Length: 124
Image (cartoon, rainbow, N blue to C red; front, side, top):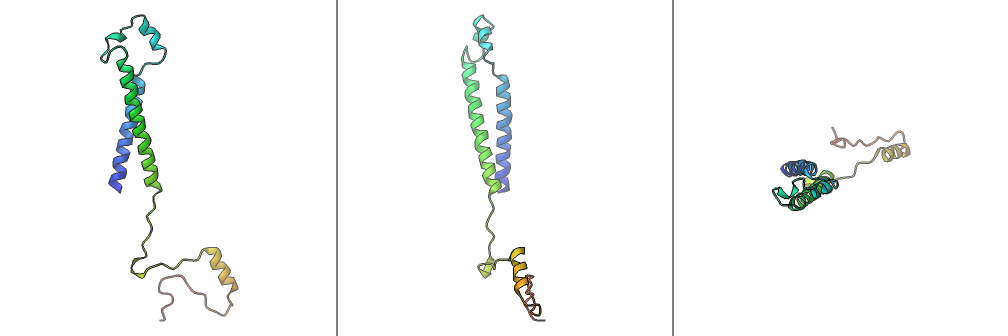
């Protein structure tokens, strides 16, 4: 389980860094006006509009990966395995402090109060 959490954290960190990098690489909406007057956008590696589509799609994929890993880490962080009762079967419920105080108050003063420590009921 620890290896799975570590793997998900690494994937989340890489996707977060990728999203940050790709957002910084993308041009804003105001950059389209400069491209209309020949700022060299047509000579880019992906073509005139190819870089915007490639970067947008890659950013969307990395954002989806980040979202899924965040949900997975939330699920794994809230997962609490049930404790096994072992060979004895069902464990006896431990009284809460309010229930213990109420039972101690209703018991007569001369009667011994049962302890919840293991082996307290064993005669010595």
